[in-house]
Image 1: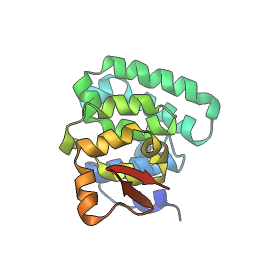
Image 2 (image 1 turned 120 degrees about the vertical axis):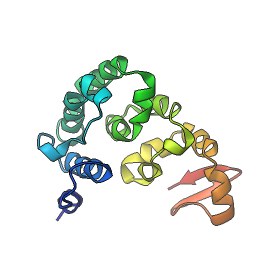
Image 3 (image 1 turned 90 degrees about the horizontal axis):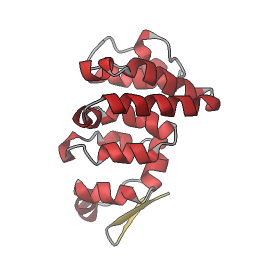
Amino acid sequence: MGFGATATDFPTQNGPIAVVRSIAAMHDGRCTEPQGLPPLPPPLQSAGAADVLRRMCVAANKDPAAKADARKAIHQMLGKLDPKDAAAFWFILAPGLVDLGDIDTAYGLIDRVPQFGLNLSLFWSAQFRPFRRDPRFQTVVQRINLTEFWKQYGPPDDCELRDRALSCH
């Protein structure tokens, strides 16, 4: 049984569980199933996020040739969104951006997310390894004071903290 099958057994159809269900379904390649998309807030709905998320799912899972189409679609959608809305829904958009290799756009959005609006669990998933390896990750963790936390309690698993810089294996 895959992660997606376990996560999609939850009965809740909205809120954080629905987002977890949708991410699991997308990672399992179930892009067209109803639970394959998170419940989209109105700003994302009107910007065409459902279509964009499906394209991102297809590109990330089975069709590398679809990556260019998905990147184009997400940039068009971001152009329709108020920058505050794009930042507010970073946790929905960032996994697809990272899967598509669009680290620059993911960092462009995260720079606008308030310190306490970040979903830190995304940072430590295997999917976000390229995001963590980017030198800009150091700026993000310093901005949200994680380096101070790590100095006191130790760095995350498989990571070292040297001179306020985190290095992960």
